[in-house]
Image 1 (cartoon, helix red, strand yellow):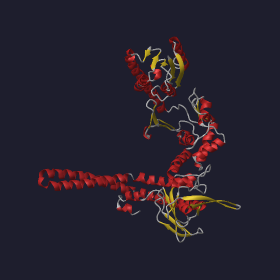
Image 2: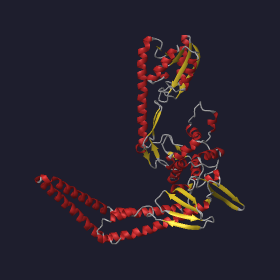
Image 3: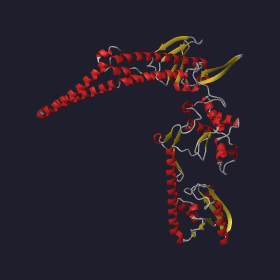
Image 4: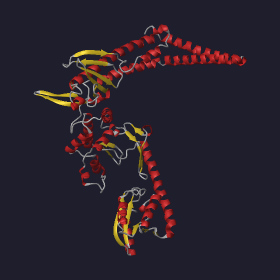
Length: 562
């Protein structure tokens, strides 16, 4: 009889008892004892038996379909598979091909009808064992996640097995630093992976092998062992918040049995701040996340191996609706000038649109001047609210008196409603009139409650507004501290820049993501301002209308100071 040997080991089993070497010896001895001809063998190492997507099983399919074997020998049926249904289907498939399964330690032959009941019971027990082990492993792993225990840290870190301490590996951390710096500096994922490979910088797989002796698998192609970077590896590092010192666990729920992966809602994840030493600052990491999302949204592209231009994806022609393309203009003994032109003009010619030509330096100057103007307005608003706070505090006694009056009125309304209810009982014919009176009193009561609440909260509201103005001013200072604005801040602030050609020159309008001013400037072909329109500044970043609505509930003598 032509026999095929199959043996398997999964990670949750006793390696000494069920080692692949031990299993193979048992199968070979059995085949020789029975006088079978061993025509081949296959095995799966560190693979679950709850699915049949295994390399060793695929080899069995091949030899069975070719009619090369008569029997498959296994140590026990759990080696073939633990999933009750899938194992039964596989055994049935083999039976249709006239191939039997022989279980050595259980003395089972699948072609023997007397063994059918035992095979059924074994299938149930094997299935239950695998699922029970899976539940216990998940529970233990989930508890470690809740406690913030790091299992295997990413590239740039090493975990001491004895102390459990997470330390930074300087050589690998420097590569992580370089990746973030390149990305926020304008380079794309492909350009970064190319530069890393050119410089011979090693991948996470290399450091896992070096520090943890973790293998990649024998079925990997030769190029894998060159430890080369590719786009997804760079992206995974950029998206990993671990590098800021924050451990986020339970982001996914994996089922190796059913081969499923479900994303866990953010609020259900386990978050541990300052769990490990940080390699990247929060600010740099947040910039990278914004750019990852923004580049996809705007379909930003760059020349091969070069960073994208600052205004790529932000400029729009207000005449034909096209985006803008950039060009480098070279002049003798002068720095390179970056120029943007309408893509409609670039592709279809002057018959369909004009160039709308504008320099990057001009746009930079325009954005910078706009932020300086917004900061100036925010500072004026901050000084105004500081003065208003002092006036408010001087009139606080009058306000407290007004609150007492409102609370007294609420008490009187309750008494009036009670009297109306009593009169309604004795005068059923005018019930509708009494109901309308009650509704009116209750509306007045709700209004009094609302006014009391808003007046009581006014201290917090004014202080909140003052803090917000101060924070906004500080934020703008940080953005323009180097007499310019970096690429990430530019994309965080600017939604779109629309450029329209007029008889006087270019009309530029900037749509900011924050609630700033509405400001239009028209330049002529020489860059001289021809017209300027400034509609309003909305309280730095927050409207003063909300504050004035609250103050409108203050008695007239207090309101006069405003």
